[in-house]
Image (tube, rainbow, N blue to C red; front, side, top):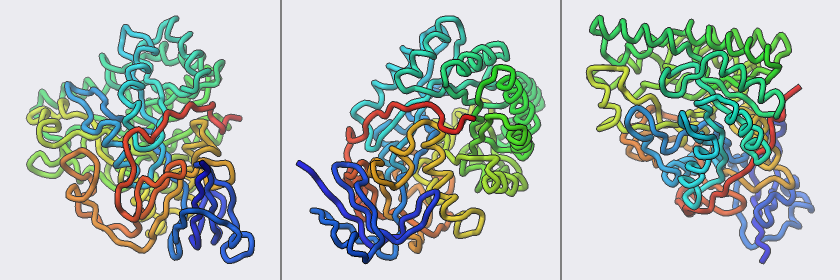
Length: 467
């Protein structure tokens, strides 16, 4: 049975165009677009019609950095694949790329199979995986080739967290050399974890235990140093590099320099670095623990350089690094010792709205909003034009967005499985109204109409930006 939907009268916004157009959806894909009011548009017939007059019609968001059910610091991220993907849909995101984890001493395949088991049958929207490489050896390197062939085409390494995820420069170089051959993309958590551990130990010895010290020991210069080192290792290996959750102006400068040199180097930032700061980390009564993440929040003056980087394309993607831990019982594990606070913030539901607020505030254009939240992450991770745009043949992942609706972000109203909002009380303009995933309504006029198991695993091709 063929199913058809037509979306009429909205302003269709993609990374390249804005046009008042009607959109015809057939069997889960975009079938055609035609300028509203023209005979071609009026000829569209469908069982279901959605009136988008006065609204935006945008591609579903692609959040290329989430951590559902991640084990960390003796606990687990509080969102499951079911609750996390439902919250993502509420926020206008229709595809996530989560991180499967290789445990030290185990194979990549074991880690990937574990994450498939967590996600399969539980997701409200489509999903894919990156692979965290924690143990570089000859077998791991061979497995990387096999994973690329089956659609897991990106591998994350950590210069931070010694004893957990940490890789030394030799391990990083070997993985980069492998990715140079197999087409994979190395994603780097760029912080000098060895030096940071020294500063953590010294701070605690001085009795500096509050959450604000988390940001003070994870210095911006140590993010910049690691970013520089990762870039040069990738250059030696002849490999592309994607630096995750860039938070500091000094790190942006390293990325800009590398890109000016013509290197295949890319950078991602996150809403928390664009909208929050060390002022939040310093909130009294341990409230600052809510904002502990790594890389850490920076002083407010870094924000202007991050926005500039997004405008100049020295930063290409805004993802969330969604990794929620409840304040009660989880963040509280670090009372009296900031180093024991689980690192991570909730945000998968907030990204599209916060970036629309950036359009309202004049930081970015409407098309750049779609570019950094939908199209570029889809291209970066080999899913475009299936994901990230509204064009014939693309999956019908479509959001009807009301640019005039006002809302107040709050834990009382969000759908993430976490007991606080990092943006509590923040007023924003713009709100998701209806969300289609492969043509099926997941959110219908602010009601959840999706279900666990609708979302399917999406194998990916390689990065589409490599020169």
